[in-house]
Length: 125
Image 1: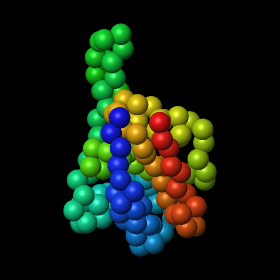
Image 2 (image 1 turned 180 degrees about the vertical axis):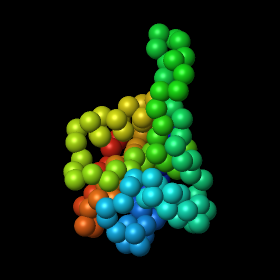
Image 3 (image 1 turned 90 degrees about the vertical axis):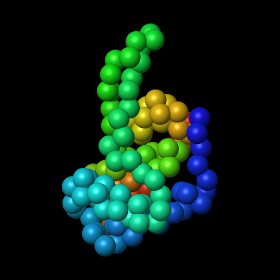
Image 4 (image 1 turned 135 degrees about the horizontal axis):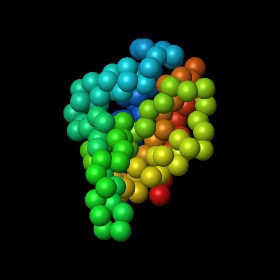
């Protein structure tokens, strides 16, 4: 499992908070995703948007299974939402992405929050 540093987490969450402060709540997830990519790249982080995740079953490659919203430095998965509140399925989805990508930590970021700090959920495996 690949893990990330606390410094990387602080940089990423700082960038997400900056995006939320600038754009506010209520927009589509893709808007926040594109804005966050600009912020992450602007501070020199390598981030992949809509990272393909293959799925294998019994040793057989089933092809493209999912797409993670953002993978930062190949060590941290970000799943962006614009919802009233997180549901258990959001956490389960991110946990599956972490397992398939062999990454230890990720964050659910709900941009439909008054303050983004209220819409951040850490997920680890």
